[in-house]
Image 1 (cartoon, helix red, strand yellow):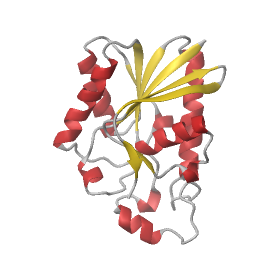
Image 2 (cartoon, rainbow, N blue to C red; image 1 turned 60 degrees about the vertical axis):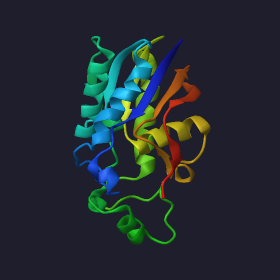
Image 3 (spheres, rainbow, N blue to C red; image 1 turned 90 degrees about the vertical axis):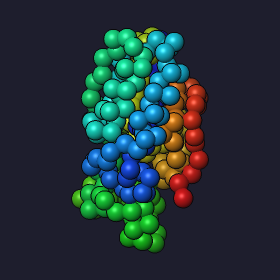
Image 4 (cartoon, helix red, strand yellow; image 1 turned 120 degrees about the vertical axis):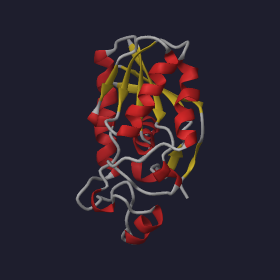
Length: 201
């Protein structure tokens, strides 16, 4: 038996627009940020999503609420720490340019441990473990995971069997919706349903 895991990113925030690494902090939605979750949710209206799992960040919880309203049916929302944004530690609040200037010249971004925080490999390990665990909870079911670009990159890298340090610069847009199939303890399928996938500048 298998579980279908739909994955989407939260709506765009002002910090995203300004290219700031906010980590576990929050930022208001832009005008587009309020619109994007509704547009993505329309792809799910006819799909058998039985539960929504959201990262505990306010921007993902706002996104999940907008999806729930758009689906217009009773789909429970659970908060899940395992799919939270990276803890950027002392780098929280820096612009992407400032982050790049402070990284060691030989740093592999996936392995680099933010001072006082975690690494992208840490993020990948906790989010992948959570997604694999969904098979036991939702046999032959479909769920939605509302999360962050780096978490999505870690999940897709796991499916593709690509080291996270080689894939973390893949950017999943705020309009992204993908589907991962988990069966027999493995990711057996992945497809992009909608949205933007490119690379961070």
